[in-house]
Length: 298
Ligand SMILES: NC(=O)C1=CN([C@@H]2O[C@H](COP(=O)(O)OP(=O)(O)OC[C@H]3O[C@@H](n4cnc5c(N)ncnc54)[C@H](O)[C@@H]3O)[C@@H](O)[C@H]2O)C=CC1
Ligand SMILES: O=C(CO)COP(=O)(O)O
Image (cartoon, rainbow, N blue to C red; front, side, top):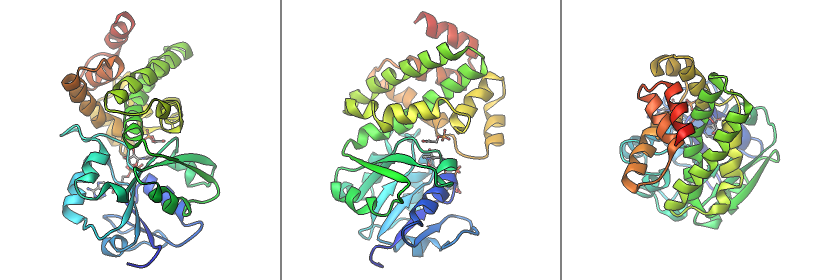
């Protein structure tokens, strides 16, 4: 294992943006399932032999990928995905911890559209880990245009990153129905309260919800067409089918599968999550106008 070697696994939008960012200060490798014309693109085995890995593959594919491709050799890992596994309701830290010791793991959160990061525009991110050494070691790889903060609230960051995608779908629906600014901001504010209620059930810290990982990423994603999840909401409000929307998108919108995960978790744990429930129902075919009526009277 080459000392201080860094590799990004997954060359989608976020993987490429992180590769661009981490290439500013040192050599950074990148790999993906299909060969890409990107500087320092390597095969998977070369990437896996690096000391530091950033993994940016969609949440629903992580377990299978770890099962089939990953061998733990002491690497330090930052997880860049945002979502909850729909088939089990597991948070990403729970999946990773089945394969890798928690002291080797960190999780990226915060408002960060790949399209802006890849242009070198400034942003602030949180590197969450139970082991502060992970933050200290990865922090030095980030370029000057990204400010990094440390938090030990891994579960809080995981829940914020996943839940805000579902709320971004709701906000896109609201926008697509032309309900106005008052409605959208009411939805986002109540969404933040709902996300905090859900998160505190699983031990997340209150401060995480009012910081970059919570309010920060929620405000960003739920108010911009740069968000894929927001665009899913716009499509649903315009009576497109989910298949049509996802085909048009051509990229992952984690909020869709995460809605199903949240639906089973809130039933199991009896958590009051009206907005996420309506997103789930709309994905299952409910008319958004009926959802609006139900949300206003609940
Ligand atoms: N795009 C963004 O602005 C941000 C995305 N994220 C998160 O990063 C994750 C990845 O998102 P994007 O890169 O934007 O999505 P994307 O749709 O652009 O790319 C996903 C990548 O994962 C790869 N992939 C899919 N299935 C795989 C498998 N079974 N094994 C290996 N690789 C596989 C695809 O080939 C593709 O390169 C998501 O969880 C997303 O929520 C987080 C912050 C910002
Ligand atoms: O997580 C993101 C920005 O922080 C990206 O959001 P989308 O996946 O909705 O585009």
